Image 1 (cartoon, rainbow, N blue to C red):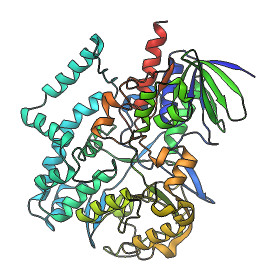
Image 2 (cartoon, one colour):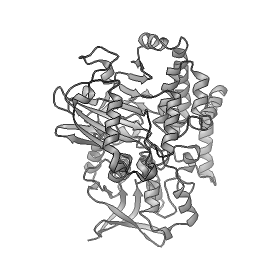
Image 3 (tube, rainbow, N blue to C red):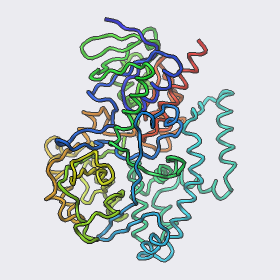
Length: 529
């Protein structure tokens, strides 16, 4: 049976739901199709063991735009953020615990360097000031390269934002965009521990050598976040990250959006160069005046469309989009709290309620990149860990806990024909053993676990090559080049087909910005018809 909508959104992740919310507010009849049985895409909370729930992919929030929170009434629909107590950084058998108290944090840093606390303060302030320019672009449509009047106006606004910076900050902006992370860190910091901590931060937002020009761009990821007016803040979400997408879905449904789960789109239908609907697995046809793809650009253009519907050169360019951010996820159900060998055992401390990062030194981080690039597993991975049940008792039974582990770099493509399905549980065992060097009692606490390899992230969540960002944030894959000059303003070469996912500007992270911007583009186009 055919049904008719104005908009059909392919993919019920947070950007698809954001777009749906804005479209329905504009009076457009909208349908969201999600191939999984639960809405939310990679921003979900799922049960990994009976009575143990956790954010299985995306696990913290920082970038979610305040405009999206306000306009979609997310707090009224159940969205609530929870503050973490600090950051525990572990490197080379030593640690650094930062909690935001100046006196405490200065003493901690001075164990490694007498000058690095002031350097960290100055560097973070600089990144925040420069980041304001980047933050201002998030809800703006990037200009076209063939600059019409509107595009020139957009470039002028960007120029004004840059002009407001001091000459030194303009220099630092260019430096951060073009310099290597290694050179930047060497310039600013003295201690190997602090250098390694900042180098490790670059691993969360890119896949690149620390010596590669442009590898410092992930520092902007640290800067552009803003939650409840606090710049650079990172939060957990009550009920897990699914609290975001459930609130979005509740708002959308309350306004009349149809949301269908277990609805896998196999084809975007095109007639005479115009998107006219979709075909579902099983053959069902759904008609619409336009289609918004929350899928990544490679999946959208190379799998959901027939190749002959696109210019061959455009297809060639899309095939060349570099994916990255390859990682694996481990979620653990625990019968108690792990002890840290740096602190007295048996007691919950603020470090349990913090962002916990275990990483090798700068040389080890660099070795991890080259190992992954060659299809090998890292010897000492970079791990980002949270124990969200320490601040949210809805996630596990009383006295029990859940732990989230993000591990990088783990390559999507393994060498010598090795399959992730064959080795993933062994890799999980190795990572837990590695973590036990810091948390000795951890193995004895585990009563359940979920291991998601890079292949699982692709197969289950539809993330091509497990890239949650839908493509690396390299200089030639951001702003007016993301994902391609002919699709950077959310329109695509196929009329009435729009991109609304992380493969579009401003890129990855749980921001809602691509969905917001794509919806605004559709609404503007609708008004002209």
